Amino acid sequence: MLAEGKIAQGMSEKEAAAAARRDFGGVEQRKETYRDRRGLPWVESLLADLAYGMRIMRRNAMFTVAVVLILTVGIGISTAVFAVAAGVLLAPPREFHSKT
Image (cartoon, rainbow, N blue to C red; front, top):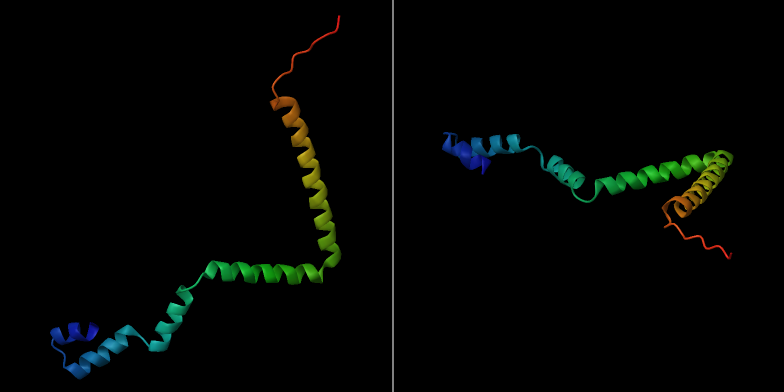
């Protein structure tokens, strides 16, 4: 289509074909551009980041263990506090019946 447009502008067929190839770019460049666009690049990036994180955690094993323990305790305490708060503050009030 580029060559046809150049022919319409007054170029010879040979010149138009060469100019169209020049404007279009190399075939290998187009293949690389297409390869970069196809697939799920964000998934590939995520997997690369996870692999990097795992390598770093293996390198600093004691730090990793300490962080995991701190997170575990923090999440457990938060869950307990919110469970108590939900039970006390959000539960419907119960009537108090005395036996007198």
